[in-house]
Amino acid sequence: MSKNLIVRFAGEGGQGVVGGSEIMAAAAAEVGYHVLTFATYPSQIKGGPAWGQARISTEPVLSSGDYLDVLVALNRYAYDHNIDELREGGIVIFNSEDFELEAGARTIGIPADQLARDSGNPRAANMIVIGAVAHLAGMPLRYLEGFVTQRFTRGRPGDDKIVEGNIKALHLGAEEAAKTGLSLGSPLDEPSEIVGERILIKGFEAACLGAMAAGLESFIGYPISPATTMLTYMEANFHGPNTFVGQASSEIESITAIIGSGFAGKKTMTSTAGPGFSLMGEGLGLAWMAEIPLVVADIQRGGPATGLPTKTEQSDLLVALNPGHGDLRLPVIAPGNVEEAFLAGAAAVNWSERYQGPVILLSEASIAERSQDILKPDVSAVIPETRVVSDGALGNERYAGGSVSPFPVPGGPGAYVANGSEHDEQGDTTHLPEVHIQMTERRFAKLQLLEDGTYEAEQTDRPVVLMPWGGSKGPAREAFERLIAEGDEIGWYYTMYLHPLPPAMLEDLRSKELVIVPELNYLGQFAGHLRSLGVNAHPIRQYTGLPFKVVDLMSAVRERMQTASGKLARV
Image 1 (cartoon, rainbow, N blue to C red):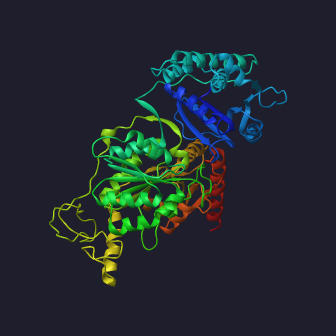
Image 2 (tube, rainbow, N blue to C red):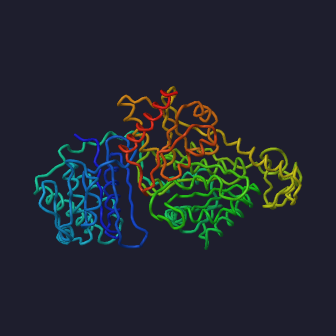
Image 3 (cartoon, helix red, strand yellow):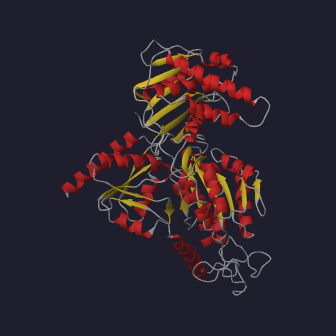
């Protein structure tokens, strides 16, 4: 039996390839499998090469997988550009109405559109193919039938006919695959018994729910890929007393609007991507200087400029830490999976309230847009934090002291100026050197209030350790576990709290001979940041717009370990 099934639906944007992988994953999750999806598509509305991938497993899934068990190719281009990722013994299902392949032992041509019409539902071509994949993997069709029934029973006239057509399409696809006598050899094992209540959720949904759990009151955003889904999710779901959702006319309006919301005493947030984040730089500098609590979720994509709007990358770290000119360094939280996205959403809101300033929730396309099954988050475990509000005891001295001080809410005690210019304790503009020193040190001292971030550490006695960040956590963790199983001596560190780093972890890292940092950017941004903190960190870089493959990471890690070992031996 097999523990994993990795299937990719490839074709053009608009052909439903992403939907096919999502349906396959959702149906599998419904009966107890662990799943993780990944999709890549062009930035145009329709057309262009696209694919969606689902990994279905009896064990928790860390990455989208290295090689495919099944490639579904809806056109020749999709076949030519994805066939190299099919494992030995894998099977190609191709759309025989669009192109032909030379007769081969591991290919199945299916006239999906014609079979869909035969099923009575011309729009069921995806179900035809999914039925064929299920047969090849030995997955009982009853799993998919239950999902189809649940998904399309919506209390509308004609639901029964839609359900019947889709179920018939599943069987027609399975029958078409059965005619070939092909299979994947090892059928997919039965799903494990479900432990705890699990849900299938996307990263952006989890982050939004986490922020809500921490008491978010205001969300104002502007559409930009791949962060638009956060805005539309909030528009559809963030309702109730004392809540507000607004769509701004630009990213500059978004940041200034949430500055106003934070100034008025509200817990507030926006979402954007690299180009929008660049436009928010001046506003974030103002929020840092005026000490206004707010959260900006930056969902990273390829850059610079328009770059790769629908691809994934980890190249915004440096600008997230320093989005404006002058001396500032913003708190950054970067979740490594969908489960952490919920925790990160809550932590970002809490941090902004605690230290009274802007916090960056730094995610990426591969986390925000993936579907992953996770244990249902315990909302009751989130303890919302609220800024200390002025009771008038300090009079108008809003910025008094060497760290955080009570926050005057307009209409309450403590009149002051929320000033972006350097200012004294009351907020009045000043150019006095001694005051600039005092206020600069105050703003940086407040970051010490955020040094409670948790972290992971294993094999801590090893001189060489692996430390990924963000969405590279999953592939790196899978690589680490394989390396350990094969006898490699390497340690593991990880945290989603990138700034400030947990002090105990940073102290450990400074003692290591080598810290290997996998990251999806050219510059090796996190490794460079760690070096500035006294850590001997070196990156494994990738900038393809796609996540790491585990096999590639293992090879690169071993190469770095051998290089480090050779240098030590020469010393």
